[in-house]
Length: 125
Image (spheres, rainbow, N blue to C red):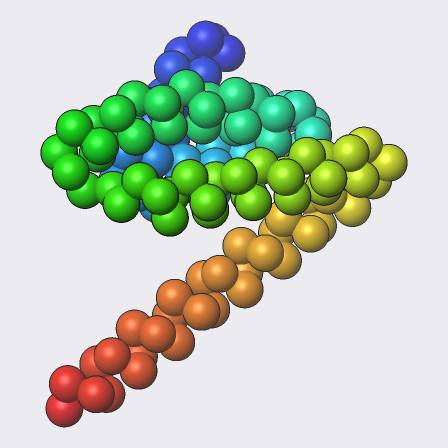
């Protein structure tokens, strides 16, 4: 039964990632809620799947001339440096604390999205 959930969760996160929404926003909570995967392992699975998806998506976007390569490389290098630094720091944080931080992050993200939608609707009037 777990294999079916893994396939469904992979499908859902792949669709979200392909649309540029970030599959991890869905993948991490789905893995931890429905399959009981601990937070650190869920995040590791997310990063692993993201790297594989990103390779294909970047190739397609470069082929379609949708990416300005130089800024993308600069952003990626800086992001990689900070990802390494913070992945080393995370090893000492408990799964419960990490889960709490991720939950707060998702709530803040949802509020920002909701407020930006409200502001855009008011500006149209």
